[in-house]
Image (tube, rainbow, N blue to C red):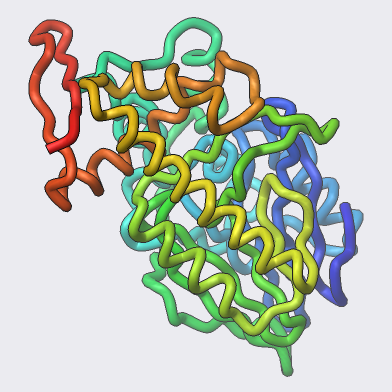
Length: 322
Protein backbone atom coordinates (compact mmCIF):
# COMPACT_ATOMS: atom_id res chain seq x y z
CA UNK A 1 0.00 0.00 0.00
CA UNK A 2 1.28 3.45 -0.93
CA UNK A 3 -0.17 6.77 0.27
CA UNK A 4 -0.39 9.22 -2.62
CA UNK A 5 -2.18 12.11 -0.89
CA UNK A 6 -4.16 12.58 2.33
CA UNK A 7 -7.00 10.09 1.98
CA UNK A 8 -5.72 8.62 -1.32
CA UNK A 9 -4.00 5.25 -1.36
CA UNK A 10 -2.65 2.93 -4.05
CA UNK A 11 -3.39 -0.69 -3.15
CA UNK A 12 -0.69 -2.90 -4.63
CA UNK A 13 -1.37 -6.35 -6.05
CA UNK A 14 -0.27 -8.50 -8.97
CA UNK A 15 -1.93 -10.12 -11.97
CA UNK A 16 -0.13 -12.40 -14.41
CA UNK A 17 3.28 -11.05 -13.41
CA UNK A 18 2.16 -7.43 -13.87
CA UNK A 19 1.44 -4.77 -11.25
CA UNK A 20 -2.23 -4.35 -10.29
CA UNK A 21 -2.67 -0.93 -8.66
CA UNK A 22 -6.13 -0.13 -7.31
CA UNK A 23 -7.18 3.21 -5.86
CA UNK A 24 -8.78 3.64 -2.44
CA UNK A 25 -10.21 7.05 -1.50
CA UNK A 26 -11.14 7.76 2.13
CA UNK A 27 -12.93 10.97 3.08
CA UNK A 28 -14.79 11.97 6.22
CA UNK A 29 -18.15 11.63 4.42
CA UNK A 30 -17.62 8.66 2.11
CA UNK A 31 -15.06 6.16 0.86
CA UNK A 32 -14.52 4.58 -2.55
CA UNK A 33 -12.67 1.57 -3.98
CA UNK A 34 -11.84 1.78 -7.68
CA UNK A 35 -11.90 -1.81 -9.07
CA UNK A 36 -11.97 -5.13 -7.25
CA UNK A 37 -9.18 -7.13 -8.87
CA UNK A 38 -9.55 -10.86 -9.58
CA UNK A 39 -11.78 -13.33 -7.75
CA UNK A 40 -9.70 -13.73 -4.59
CA UNK A 41 -8.06 -10.30 -4.49
CA UNK A 42 -10.50 -8.74 -2.00
CA UNK A 43 -9.29 -11.16 0.67
CA UNK A 44 -5.76 -11.48 -0.72
CA UNK A 45 -4.72 -7.82 -0.68
CA UNK A 46 -7.57 -5.31 -1.02
CA UNK A 47 -9.21 -5.58 2.41
CA UNK A 48 -5.87 -5.96 4.26
CA UNK A 49 -4.40 -2.87 2.58
CA UNK A 50 -7.55 -0.81 3.20
CA UNK A 51 -7.10 -1.64 6.88
CA UNK A 52 -3.41 -0.72 6.61
CA UNK A 53 -4.54 2.65 5.22
CA UNK A 54 -6.66 3.21 8.32
CA UNK A 55 -9.98 2.35 6.67
CA UNK A 56 -12.69 -0.21 7.35
CA UNK A 57 -13.41 -2.29 4.22
CA UNK A 58 -16.78 -3.34 5.62
CA UNK A 59 -17.89 0.30 5.66
CA UNK A 60 -17.02 1.23 2.09
CA UNK A 61 -19.54 3.65 0.56
CA UNK A 62 -18.72 3.04 -3.10
CA UNK A 63 -17.17 0.26 -5.19
CA UNK A 64 -16.65 1.45 -8.77
CA UNK A 65 -15.50 -0.71 -11.70
CA UNK A 66 -13.41 1.19 -14.24
CA UNK A 67 -14.29 -1.40 -16.92
CA UNK A 68 -15.14 -5.07 -17.40
CA UNK A 69 -12.04 -7.27 -17.21
CA UNK A 70 -11.17 -10.19 -14.96
CA UNK A 71 -8.64 -8.17 -12.97
CA UNK A 72 -11.04 -5.26 -12.45
CA UNK A 73 -14.42 -6.90 -11.83
CA UNK A 74 -13.54 -10.45 -10.80
CA UNK A 75 -13.63 -9.53 -7.11
CA UNK A 76 -17.05 -7.86 -7.21
CA UNK A 77 -18.93 -10.64 -5.45
CA UNK A 78 -16.33 -11.12 -2.72
CA UNK A 79 -16.00 -7.36 -2.19
CA UNK A 80 -19.77 -7.02 -1.76
CA UNK A 81 -19.66 -9.79 0.84
CA UNK A 82 -17.05 -7.75 2.71
CA UNK A 83 -18.87 -4.42 2.19
CA UNK A 84 -22.57 -5.30 1.75
CA UNK A 85 -23.78 -1.70 2.06
CA UNK A 86 -21.40 -0.29 -0.57
CA UNK A 87 -22.99 0.82 -3.85
CA UNK A 88 -21.48 -1.18 -6.73
CA UNK A 89 -21.17 0.95 -9.87
CA UNK A 90 -19.71 0.89 -13.38
CA UNK A 91 -19.97 2.63 -16.73
CA UNK A 92 -23.50 2.44 -18.12
CA UNK A 93 -22.41 0.75 -21.36
CA UNK A 94 -20.53 -1.97 -19.47
CA UNK A 95 -23.23 -3.05 -17.03
CA UNK A 96 -23.96 -6.52 -18.45
CA UNK A 97 -20.28 -7.45 -18.67
CA UNK A 98 -19.51 -6.19 -15.17
CA UNK A 99 -22.47 -8.04 -13.67
CA UNK A 100 -22.12 -11.43 -15.33
CA UNK A 101 -18.81 -13.34 -15.67
CA UNK A 102 -20.30 -15.51 -18.43
CA UNK A 103 -21.28 -12.45 -20.46
CA UNK A 104 -17.82 -10.97 -19.90
CA UNK A 105 -16.19 -14.12 -21.21
CA UNK A 106 -18.46 -14.44 -24.24
CA UNK A 107 -18.38 -10.82 -25.38
CA UNK A 108 -14.80 -9.90 -24.45
CA UNK A 109 -12.51 -12.91 -24.24
CA UNK A 110 -14.30 -15.09 -26.80
CA UNK A 111 -15.24 -12.28 -29.19
CA UNK A 112 -12.90 -13.35 -32.00
CA UNK A 113 -13.96 -16.97 -32.26
CA UNK A 114 -16.86 -16.51 -34.67
CA UNK A 115 -15.11 -14.64 -37.49
CA UNK A 116 -11.43 -15.29 -36.86
CA UNK A 117 -11.15 -18.74 -35.22
CA UNK A 118 -9.17 -17.12 -32.38
CA UNK A 119 -9.96 -18.26 -28.84
CA UNK A 120 -8.41 -19.19 -25.51
CA UNK A 121 -7.94 -22.77 -24.39
CA UNK A 122 -6.08 -24.84 -21.82
CA UNK A 123 -4.57 -23.14 -18.77
CA UNK A 124 -5.27 -19.63 -20.08
CA UNK A 125 -8.96 -20.42 -20.56
CA UNK A 126 -9.18 -21.87 -17.05
CA UNK A 127 -7.39 -18.86 -15.55
CA UNK A 128 -9.72 -16.38 -17.25
CA UNK A 129 -12.83 -18.18 -16.07
CA UNK A 130 -11.51 -18.68 -12.54
CA UNK A 131 -10.42 -15.07 -12.10
CA UNK A 132 -13.44 -13.38 -13.70
CA UNK A 133 -15.63 -14.04 -10.67
CA UNK A 134 -17.37 -17.22 -9.65
CA UNK A 135 -20.92 -15.84 -9.80
CA UNK A 136 -22.89 -12.80 -11.00
CA UNK A 137 -23.04 -9.65 -8.87
CA UNK A 138 -25.73 -7.03 -9.63
CA UNK A 139 -24.57 -3.51 -10.46
CA UNK A 140 -26.56 -0.96 -8.46
CA UNK A 141 -25.52 2.33 -10.09
CA UNK A 142 -24.22 3.22 -13.56
CA UNK A 143 -22.37 6.33 -14.69
CA UNK A 144 -22.14 8.02 -18.08
CA UNK A 145 -19.59 10.66 -17.14
CA UNK A 146 -20.02 14.05 -15.50
CA UNK A 147 -21.31 12.74 -12.17
CA UNK A 148 -19.83 14.02 -8.91
CA UNK A 149 -19.32 12.21 -5.61
CA UNK A 150 -18.66 14.11 -2.38
CA UNK A 151 -16.12 12.27 -0.24
CA UNK A 152 -15.44 15.00 2.30
CA UNK A 153 -16.52 18.43 3.41
CA UNK A 154 -14.13 20.00 0.90
CA UNK A 155 -13.43 17.01 -1.34
CA UNK A 156 -15.44 16.12 -4.42
CA UNK A 157 -14.45 13.84 -7.28
CA UNK A 158 -15.82 13.68 -10.82
CA UNK A 159 -16.53 10.58 -12.89
CA UNK A 160 -15.17 10.87 -16.43
CA UNK A 161 -16.18 8.80 -19.44
CA UNK A 162 -12.95 7.51 -21.03
CA UNK A 163 -13.94 4.82 -23.58
CA UNK A 164 -11.58 2.91 -25.83
CA UNK A 165 -10.53 -0.12 -23.82
CA UNK A 166 -14.26 -0.59 -23.15
CA UNK A 167 -17.33 1.37 -24.23
CA UNK A 168 -18.14 2.46 -20.68
CA UNK A 169 -14.63 2.84 -19.24
CA UNK A 170 -14.46 5.31 -16.36
CA UNK A 171 -11.73 7.53 -14.93
CA UNK A 172 -11.87 9.38 -11.61
CA UNK A 173 -10.83 13.03 -11.66
CA UNK A 174 -9.69 14.33 -8.28
CA UNK A 175 -9.38 18.13 -8.59
CA UNK A 176 -8.41 18.56 -4.94
CA UNK A 177 -5.17 16.68 -5.57
CA UNK A 178 -4.79 17.56 -9.28
CA UNK A 179 -4.92 13.84 -10.02
CA UNK A 180 -6.68 11.32 -12.25
CA UNK A 181 -7.08 7.62 -11.53
CA UNK A 182 -7.41 6.11 -14.97
CA UNK A 183 -7.74 2.35 -14.69
CA UNK A 184 -6.76 0.99 -18.11
CA UNK A 185 -7.98 3.97 -20.13
CA UNK A 186 -4.63 4.40 -21.90
CA UNK A 187 -1.88 1.82 -22.33
CA UNK A 188 1.32 3.42 -23.52
CA UNK A 189 3.15 1.02 -25.86
CA UNK A 190 3.61 -1.96 -23.55
CA UNK A 191 2.69 -3.55 -20.23
CA UNK A 192 5.76 -4.13 -18.07
CA UNK A 193 6.28 -6.96 -15.60
CA UNK A 194 6.98 -6.47 -11.91
CA UNK A 195 10.66 -6.65 -12.92
CA UNK A 196 10.21 -3.89 -15.51
CA UNK A 197 10.42 -6.18 -18.53
CA UNK A 198 7.98 -6.18 -21.49
CA UNK A 199 5.28 -8.74 -20.73
CA UNK A 200 2.07 -7.83 -22.58
CA UNK A 201 0.73 -5.77 -25.50
CA UNK A 202 -1.79 -2.89 -25.45
CA UNK A 203 -5.36 -4.19 -25.66
CA UNK A 204 -7.54 -1.18 -26.47
CA UNK A 205 -10.61 -2.08 -28.53
CA UNK A 206 -12.31 0.97 -30.03
CA UNK A 207 -9.72 3.08 -31.81
CA UNK A 208 -11.49 6.40 -32.34
CA UNK A 209 -12.74 6.42 -28.75
CA UNK A 210 -9.27 5.46 -27.53
CA UNK A 211 -7.60 8.33 -29.39
CA UNK A 212 -10.20 10.75 -28.03
CA UNK A 213 -9.55 9.50 -24.50
CA UNK A 214 -5.81 10.04 -24.96
CA UNK A 215 -6.52 13.61 -26.06
CA UNK A 216 -8.84 14.18 -23.11
CA UNK A 217 -6.27 12.84 -20.66
CA UNK A 218 -3.44 15.01 -21.89
CA UNK A 219 -5.60 18.11 -21.40
CA UNK A 220 -6.83 17.33 -17.89
CA UNK A 221 -5.76 19.83 -15.19
CA UNK A 222 -3.68 17.23 -13.35
CA UNK A 223 -0.13 16.72 -12.13
CA UNK A 224 -0.55 13.04 -11.15
CA UNK A 225 -1.91 10.15 -13.20
CA UNK A 226 -2.35 6.61 -11.88
CA UNK A 227 -3.13 3.70 -14.19
CA UNK A 228 -3.69 0.18 -12.93
CA UNK A 229 -0.67 -1.47 -14.57
CA UNK A 230 1.83 1.31 -15.30
CA UNK A 231 4.24 3.33 -13.17
CA UNK A 232 2.75 6.41 -11.51
CA UNK A 233 3.06 9.43 -13.81
CA UNK A 234 3.95 12.90 -12.52
CA UNK A 235 4.09 16.27 -14.28
CA UNK A 236 5.50 16.01 -17.83
CA UNK A 237 5.45 12.21 -17.64
CA UNK A 238 1.66 12.37 -18.16
CA UNK A 239 1.99 14.06 -21.56
CA UNK A 240 4.79 11.65 -22.48
CA UNK A 241 2.58 8.67 -21.64
CA UNK A 242 -0.23 10.11 -23.76
CA UNK A 243 2.16 10.72 -26.66
CA UNK A 244 3.50 7.18 -26.34
CA UNK A 245 -0.03 5.77 -26.35
CA UNK A 246 -1.07 7.71 -29.45
CA UNK A 247 2.15 6.91 -31.32
CA UNK A 248 1.69 3.20 -30.70
CA UNK A 249 -1.87 3.20 -32.06
CA UNK A 250 -0.83 5.21 -35.11
CA UNK A 251 2.11 2.89 -35.76
CA UNK A 252 -0.12 -0.18 -35.45
CA UNK A 253 -2.51 1.20 -38.05
CA UNK A 254 0.31 2.08 -40.47
CA UNK A 255 1.73 -1.42 -40.16
CA UNK A 256 -1.70 -2.98 -40.71
CA UNK A 257 -2.34 -0.91 -43.84
CA UNK A 258 1.07 -1.81 -45.25
CA UNK A 259 0.55 -5.51 -44.53
CA UNK A 260 -2.86 -5.47 -46.22
CA UNK A 261 -1.31 -4.85 -49.61
CA UNK A 262 -1.71 -8.62 -49.55
CA UNK A 263 -4.67 -10.45 -47.95
CA UNK A 264 -4.26 -11.31 -44.27
CA UNK A 265 -6.48 -12.83 -41.62
CA UNK A 266 -6.57 -11.25 -38.18
CA UNK A 267 -4.39 -14.05 -36.82
CA UNK A 268 -1.84 -13.58 -39.59
CA UNK A 269 -1.66 -9.86 -38.90
CA UNK A 270 -1.01 -10.49 -35.20
CA UNK A 271 1.79 -12.96 -35.85
CA UNK A 272 3.40 -10.87 -38.60
CA UNK A 273 3.30 -7.50 -36.85
CA UNK A 274 3.84 -8.45 -33.21
CA UNK A 275 7.65 -8.45 -33.50
CA UNK A 276 7.51 -4.99 -35.08
CA UNK A 277 5.48 -3.52 -32.22
CA UNK A 278 6.97 -4.90 -29.02
CA UNK A 279 9.52 -7.11 -27.29
CA UNK A 280 6.98 -8.94 -25.18
CA UNK A 281 7.06 -12.78 -25.34
CA UNK A 282 5.99 -13.90 -28.81
CA UNK A 283 3.25 -16.05 -27.24
CA UNK A 284 1.48 -12.75 -26.48
CA UNK A 285 1.25 -11.68 -30.13
CA UNK A 286 -2.21 -13.21 -30.63
CA UNK A 287 -3.54 -10.88 -27.93
CA UNK A 288 -2.95 -8.07 -30.42
CA UNK A 289 -6.29 -9.25 -31.83
CA UNK A 290 -8.11 -6.89 -29.45
CA UNK A 291 -6.51 -3.73 -30.81
CA UNK A 292 -6.04 -5.00 -34.37
CA UNK A 293 -9.72 -5.90 -34.67
CA UNK A 294 -10.50 -2.35 -33.58
CA UNK A 295 -8.24 -0.98 -36.31
CA UNK A 296 -9.83 -3.27 -38.91
CA UNK A 297 -13.33 -2.13 -37.93
CA UNK A 298 -12.17 1.49 -38.18
CA UNK A 299 -10.54 0.98 -41.59
CA UNK A 300 -13.58 -0.88 -42.94
CA UNK A 301 -15.86 1.96 -41.83
CA UNK A 302 -13.65 4.40 -43.75
CA UNK A 303 -13.62 2.19 -46.86
CA UNK A 304 -9.83 1.89 -46.74
CA UNK A 305 -9.92 -1.91 -46.64
CA UNK A 306 -12.32 -4.67 -47.62
CA UNK A 307 -13.08 -8.08 -46.18
CA UNK A 308 -14.27 -11.43 -47.47
CA UNK A 309 -14.76 -14.94 -46.19
CA UNK A 310 -11.64 -17.01 -46.76
CA UNK A 311 -12.92 -20.12 -45.05
CA UNK A 312 -16.47 -21.04 -44.08
CA UNK A 313 -15.95 -23.65 -41.32
CA UNK A 314 -14.44 -22.55 -39.07
CA UNK A 315 -15.29 -19.09 -40.35
CA UNK A 316 -12.23 -16.97 -41.10
CA UNK A 317 -12.31 -13.50 -42.62
CA UNK A 318 -9.43 -12.00 -44.54
CA UNK A 319 -8.72 -8.35 -45.24
CA UNK A 320 -6.92 -6.35 -47.94
CA UNK A 321 -6.73 -2.79 -49.20
CA UNK A 322 -9.90 -1.56 -50.91
